[in-house]
Image (cartoon, rainbow over all chains, first blue to last red; front, top):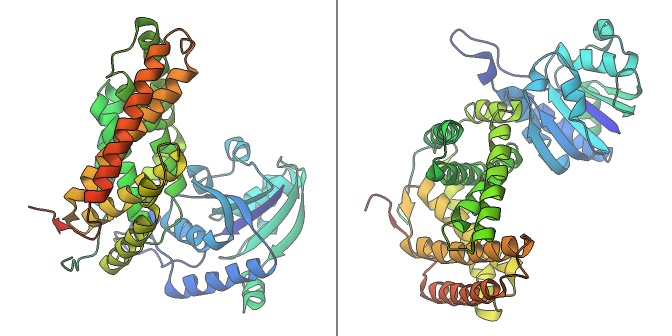
Length: 158
Length: 243
């Protein structure tokens, strides 16, 4: 399995009275992530499953990934919390994308690569960053084949 | 079609979907299962109007589980020989257990949460959507003229596009009596096709051959009615939704 772990694009700052789950992407975040998607497309990336968190900023980021999606999408609260066995059990297919939030996306990357969640700081992901893992989707059994900061994919997509 | 200029907010139908989920959870209200499915279909059209791809598969997943129960509710309105009726009731109970299990999943909870975060869609998208879907309907509807009842998949596609045009009009505060009548006839045709499929799946199909013959006649009649409705329907016509 190729697993694409994606952190949502830049969202508006939290303001008083606005629930965190309602924070949308900024216009700039949306434009930049559209270029990231073009970069992924240029790398021939396609997804046969896209899982995303229900929070608006992740939902909007997933929506921008729609041109890469050949199969189904699924909303899951498992991407709005610390990674769990339940999340891993949802992974199926050959090319799976996950759109979620920090600190959990880097914790997931650390867990799948090393089996050690404590190493999440080593794999800290900027907004719009994409980590590409390959192998059996089990903790400690995947290999890192790409770790794209957002500007790299934007360059590829320009 | 009179212009509708307000942003289109899904909130009333998200609320209705959640209310029907609660009613289904609480008891055996047959209508709530139907309304759950209708609300999910309307929200699917709203997402399409907004050009959104996400959450449509989740709504389809929910709608499909509700349809599993609804199909048996419709089937059980018919008179069946006892063993077939008992078998259908058992299948309906199984489908309902499956639906109830699904309503308690984190995915279902997340779906409602995610739907509630979405901003209203621009009315101009809806007008464009109606125009495009009407063109599709004009093209696909020809199957009712050019083919017979055996073209099941093509007829099913007509039914789906009729539903999309009708619901999109309703999001704009419009309605079409003609499309409603056509949708009803195509729905009856589909119900009969489902009845045939389930009857054939039952262990009693060979034992009650007369049921098969009755259903085949009914299917042909439903197709004839749908064809007549298609000929009578002006797919470009719509009226004020409040009249």
